Image (cartoon, helix red, strand yellow):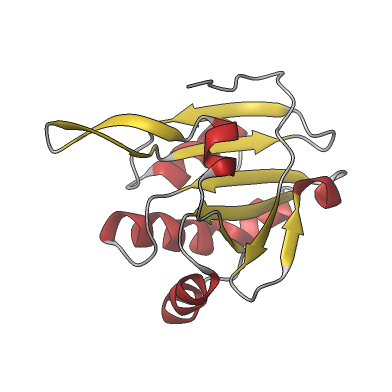
Length: 155
């Protein structure tokens, strides 16, 4: 599994969002992007993390960031997640985990004491030129957004 580090180019991608609209990273050049990978919509930890991003979206946008969430869920499930929890940022569908692979957010992990293959909860901050500024792997859902805001110097 390849892991990205600050200074690496962010792998480009085009994925469908919750409404079936294509979202491409290259179309966001000129913007700073927070790209986070989570295991599954509407599960407790993923809901906590998504709602924390939702609740911090004003300050993140105010600091110039676009937030994108990525999971293996299909657009219909992502739409239900968005509607259920009032999420106001794009949720992207990567069912074959190709983008997860490109970012090193798929691989072996410990789950309840057993080694399994799956999504590694990860967050990447990408600068306006498409370069990785921060790469955070195996993050904890609870408190992650607050820690990220502190890293980025956002109150």
